[in-house]
Image (cartoon, rainbow, N blue to C red; front, side, top):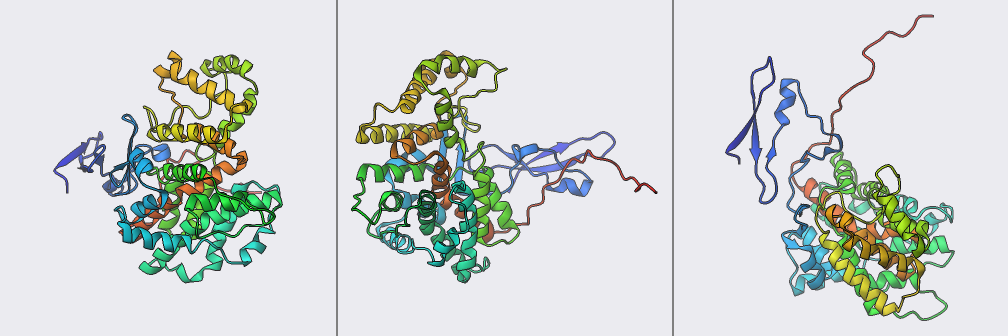
Length: 425
């Protein structure tokens, strides 16, 4: 498995040999598991230098701007495949043929309804609850409604749970929106596409006919595709960690949603719109650009640069084209926030400060603009991210459960008090 080793030399100890493994792509990794036998372990806050698992699902090269799902570049998938193709690819390792795609689509689109009692479950939330708070609750609650797919050691149960989650996430997301608006829930339509059905459940009402715009439906499909997986990020790692305890898949995905909620992760696209609202007017842009360049100013431009990508985010190129299509289809050119966004985009692509630091507009920047144009409120942005990311979470959960795994148990560098006695009275 390896023909290379590293030697760790610590003063006063015998050298420790550690195996070095090579993946099909990416950096070599040093296997440090044997360190515990020597009374040692590594210190790596945030686990940014630690491979927590082996995986065959997604590969990222941030320096080169590469994102591959099962070997396929994300831009090729976004242009040539639809979201359900990508779901199938992530779950099963290969793109579906026509028969497989038909069967998979039939399963997903005919299981989009949720148990009728879920409607009553929503009544326990305040109308002004953050949609992500509701999603954490209702997705976790699926385990209370679907007892027949909770045995994680059963291949069929895992399959059924995966299908249910991909099918029902858009329904729950749309229900969350409708609940906050005080509008009736709209049942899914099996004759529509995945993205088109979501738009139908979000924006139609029983009072009048609603026709899904095919351009907007395709845009939703691409948005979901571009968010489908992103390797071992915070939410995916959370799903894996929760799953390592043997928790059921619905609970694991709810844990992933909770991690995604954070503004440093899935909340970034919501933060983009909040930033545009703070800027308020095109006349204020220069002032805010100066503040963004001032390292002593706490203001930061949201939606520019990426922790992983030190080059252009490969998803952003596709998302920009989709953004242009949506704005063109809707004929939006007078929205003040969108004007600010377009001006910021131009500055980021031309200003030497942003170009040198590679602070390019990222996928969150463009998705935030699209959601704003579609009339989706800011606090629903991360919910849509969660819908798109579901197949990635499930694929990683299935990969872990299907293989050899141990319950996650990170170590710590203890810096507290040494043992001390309780004070006597």
